[in-house]
Image 1 (cartoon, rainbow, N blue to C red):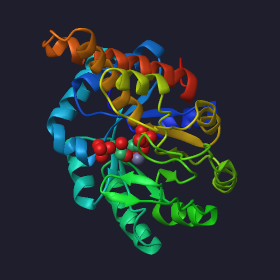
Image 2 (image 1 turned 90 degrees about the horizontal axis):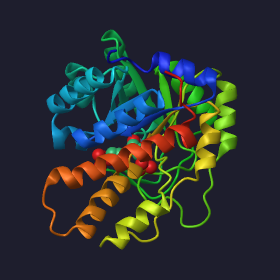
Image 3 (image 1 turned 60 degrees about the vertical axis):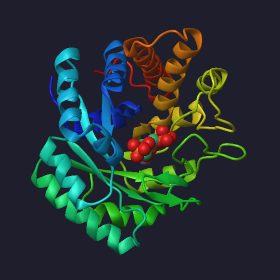
Image 4 (image 1 turned 180 degrees about the vertical axis):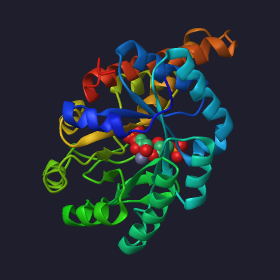
Length: 307
Ligand code: G3H
Ligand code: 13P
Ligand code: ZN
């Protein structure tokens, strides 16, 4: 039991036609909900930390809690930097002990993305850390980077990018987007682009960001107990399961955890207004996260019983 890179995880996932769930962590209850689900389902998981999470909880707290999760559950975990915005943040993550980093240069002009990503890859590989990069632009909000439109990943450019940078995995844009409001109309993913990239880069792990399903029941519970989340729409589960059976080896989900945690907490507040013990409502949030991640492992990722 240890902190591991995603190398072996992705190899097994690619060959086994499933994907590894990458779940964003910000506090102890979220970590426990995710890893308890992984243990119950005998599934690998990636715990990922955004710049916002680094600022909120602090790298030392997050790393110590992830070490505790490994000791408590006895399962290997990968600790990943999500949407690393610059070399300094990548360096901080690696110094903290992360085993995987994302450098997100997708908003730079192509040659600049190649150059900056290559610099990160050289540094990370010298420290035994694997690198995810991104090509194409997801609609929605990527940390501080706002984008209103999709720029789908161009398959030939993906091949050139992977060859020139030496990245270990690549996040592509095929129609997913961050947050709870992904589609105005019908959900649509460009599986033709994924298929073409898979054909040109056989065996290479692809990553899908913005892949929350936005469970209507979780939204309904939030709204029933005082929330106001209107028009939320995510990626249909069957589309994600299809992607995970293809070259997609890592599927990023954060919004679904946020909704589950909030729904769990709001229900306690609504049902028991006299309650003010944080363990009661944070505990309910933790249980809701565990149930959500268990369902993801079975229905979306197909990674059950692969440990
Ligand atoms: O892709 C973004 C993730 O959902 C992390 O969000 O930057 O608010 O922590 P955050
Ligand atoms: P969602 O907003 O769909 O959960 O995506 C999360 C993500 O991509 C984190 O990098
Ligand atoms: Zn993302």
